[in-house]
Amino acid sequence: MGDLGDKITAAFGSVPQVSALDDDMRTYVVELATSMLEDATEHGSTPADVKDELKEAIAPMLEEFEVPEDAVESLCTTLSKLLVSGDEEIEDDGKDYVVQLRDIRLGFGARMLLHKTDLILERNHRYGLVGENGIGKTTLLTRVVKGDIRGWPTHLKCVYVQHEVLAEASETVIHWAHTHLAYHLPEAVEE
Image (cartoon, rainbow, N blue to C red; front, side, top):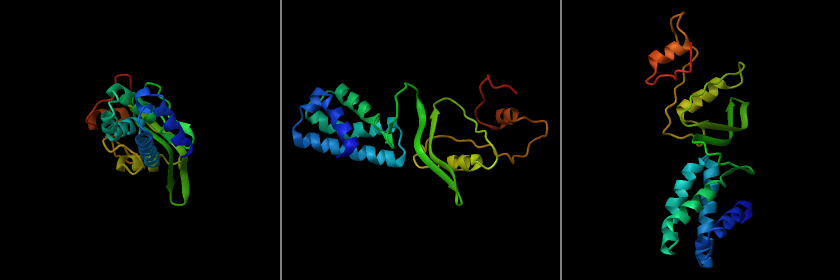
């Protein structure tokens, strides 16, 4: 079954009510969870999304065998932490991530701009991208705004202020953002 399957089998074995399932049912649920985690890894899903999907898929089966809801919740949390990129497990550091994309690749023409790169964004934070010319900042942001990155959450509102935006010569980026965006920048950001 492979390393991931072994980890999933071990996770199931750590929940007494689940380890008491008959062999056929336990094998079926392990194979289902393995398939779901492999698909989630391929599509760049976040652990939170995977947890919800796992719970939706396996909870009804486990409830038939009278596995308590808290045991199902614990199992799905454990399984979602097995979402991997290569051999690296995504750690649960207690932060609320809205984006956790592992191992993304981004190219422009024949040039590889990002290779095996992690993009991790925490909820309720705003991010800026700074770097040298030609390294892919515009390409990355254009793809983010279009939602054209594997696994990018479709519910996110992304604002990309292009550097070609015409503004008053005396107008700063902060001033432009305050007057043109639907939300305001935090007080800590000064002009």
